[in-house]
Amino acid sequence: MIQFLTSTSTVRLIEQIVIDAEDNLVLVSASPHFSEKLMQQLKSADDRGVSIILMVDDVLFEESVADQFSSFEKFSIFRCHDMNGHCYANERSMIVTSLGISDKIPTGVHLGTEISSDEQAYLDAMDTLAEVRESVNLSDIILESSPARKNHASGKKAVRSPILRIIKGGLRKKFNRKIKEESRSGQSPSCKACEAALDDSTGNSLCPECEQRKKYRHTALYIASDLTA
Image 1 (cartoon, rainbow, N blue to C red):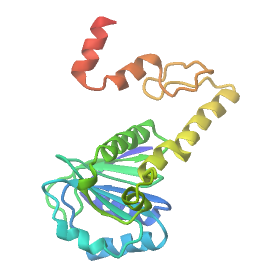
Image 2: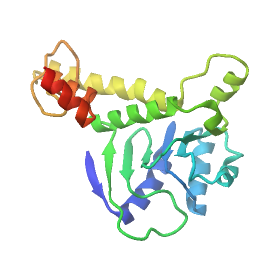
Image 3: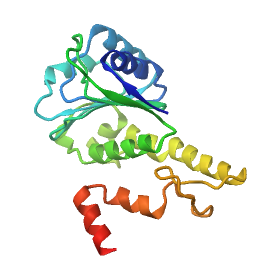
Image 4: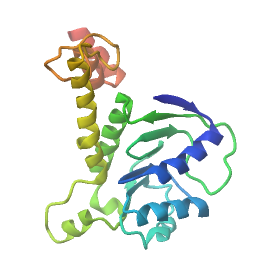
């Protein structure tokens, strides 16, 4: 399911994503400022054992904000170069929006979308966030209370981050299982992007043309590949 969001509904759903998180929570906001209410909800999530990742801009983020999370058990803040987007996700859904986290009432018009985890767009977005997360240097980790940083300090191999466990774990298996179930029920699986019929034996969710379009998602690269095909 994908639905359109306005300013009011976005604020409410950001809080709901925090409340509904069971294992992992990802917050992407260039320069967040947390209200007392949202801080309480995040603390409750931490007390439930939810692993929380906050991804911020390397210049705009005010490091004093990190002090609010010093007592959290499973909380990480990663500083990313030129981070302009705002995105909030748990295991069930994701919000992509123009609205950053703020302790003030939103002003102006903000638009966005909510995407449920059974949509290909959700998996694509999580893949992109994982790439951004893995490109972060150790010096850009502002706060990390997870085992990954402790292992790095002791010379041990780092544990996969929670964001990667979301992508490579249950959700990907659930998505592939859905395709297989469609095949067994007599319904030929179709491409998630263009709905073209797929080969039952491949288990792919996209047709070859859409796979190429995804690979060359930057316009110039796709046009170049299309001309040479």
